[in-house]
Image 1 (cartoon, rainbow, N blue to C red):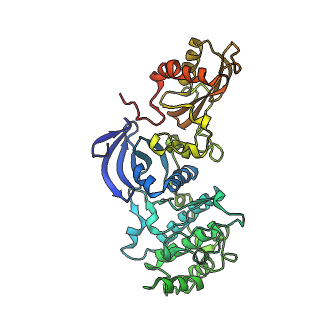
Image 2: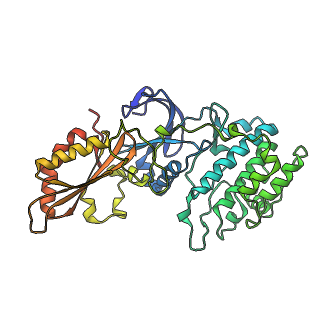
Image 3: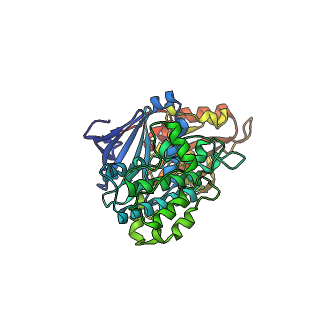
Length: 439
């Protein structure tokens, strides 16, 4: 499936290898329906499991779906098999910003444009409660229009990661770009730490080298703690003043993003083009109903209201090799039936109604993405009642969960295995923990 020329999930043409790391490979891909170029990150689940990086993988997917901005690399789709997780993301043809810097410093106008786009992206992340924590030119990509795209959220943190003191405590990031309070290991404000890293990037864009560097790591950390750096003589005075406010070793007095945006040098030539290009939302994955706006679908495509969105953690837990549901649900819930379908929500609902009628179960409740089927007889443990819930992964990709809400457990399990599961085969793309049916 990972060789050149192969088709992935009957939807993407998988092409040349773009890059690889310890746990994943990134391929060039093309959407067979739209012709759009994409990048497909193929994550090896066994390696991730062995390395204990489940939480990091979950967080990266969640954050990419949570932050929707023209200067943040878009996540289009998440797919999974027993051994692999596939992240379909925006293809940034311009490569890493770092590669552009290997030729030396940038012209002031271009450096300002990139800095404006970086600040805009980071501001959006912070507004969503996301702190990147590893901002550097290697983690900033460029599209074919020369617009900046923040990427690699593997070390990012969410607001709920804060401790009772309201601070983050995990020391992470790249030494030359990390804020002094992160080094001090006494807790830090993720937003303030990101702002410091943005300041280091601005310095590098204009100077062509790092503000803090030393062959001895401890010596370099000492310079960072004291903010010992010297601007080259070609830096405009406005930039020198701005950098002194950003690279302030005291996070409490360090300039905020709001104040950076008011800076006269920052505001020069600031227009809509510096904010990247407009996002095409129709392919944008939407994974957290509590924090993301719904993707609108035309009535001709979906007669029922939009189903509840699925949390990213549940997406990557669908196959047995990555099933961590036991950490979050009870034993009874584990016995529920789950499957993925590529049918529309209305088609799934119609099929469930049909199965219910054949089992003499009446539809007692029906609303957006939810249905309750109930028997007419009173059993030993009450009337059998089955809840069916549909979660949207993408507009054309749904997870369906069936569970007993009342009645005899044995009767329910017998009904599931002997009648319901066989009857649903025609709308099932993959049962939980099993390979997709691509026949």
